Length: 258
Image 1 (cartoon, one colour):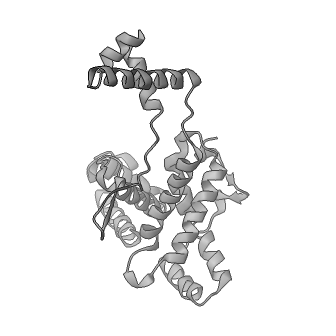
Image 2: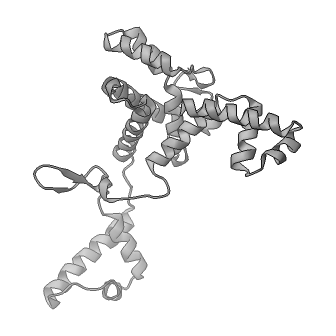
Image 3: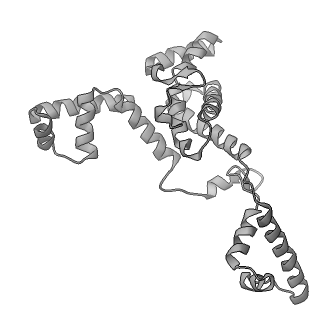
């Protein structure tokens, strides 16, 4: 089911989730540090929208949304238990990577690639043929040579060999010099879909929710549709001065939230 159309997840009515202000979060954290369990529950409830924002990223994988929500909540709770207010970092900035990491671990551990028996048979025949070839010729065969010996398309051989490779975790150590450990994820870069960029998008989306419908419309027209203030004024039927004033006020409120 599409997340946008699913109102209740794990018995939680997502349409009625509360939103905490920064002041409320700070006050609750002071109580949480003193062991106040009720404040902890209130803080968790006030940040469930953050979990919803994160699981939208994984919504196209065919996973059960209730499961992803529960795993995301575990990440949220871990973030609450480990958050240090003295570092002067917003809780959402700290929590989102924790929630993402928890969901990624769940997906990695519970979604092993299933390889068909026919693919496994081709892969093992290829490996056996490869060993025999190396033993006879003292060198490794090419894919073309293996395909010719086995009388199979080389694409089938490549696909079969790749299918039996164990998936490598992004948290797998790639190098260790006795002090610092470098993980696989440290060597991989995605310039298009970074967690930092995605976190900024979440913050922007949450900030937009604080605006009135008219303010949202103006911001969308100005910064997403690229229209001038005069064009916006003509479209919505107010003066350019009013557009300028509404735009400035909306940006100031968004800036404070982000």
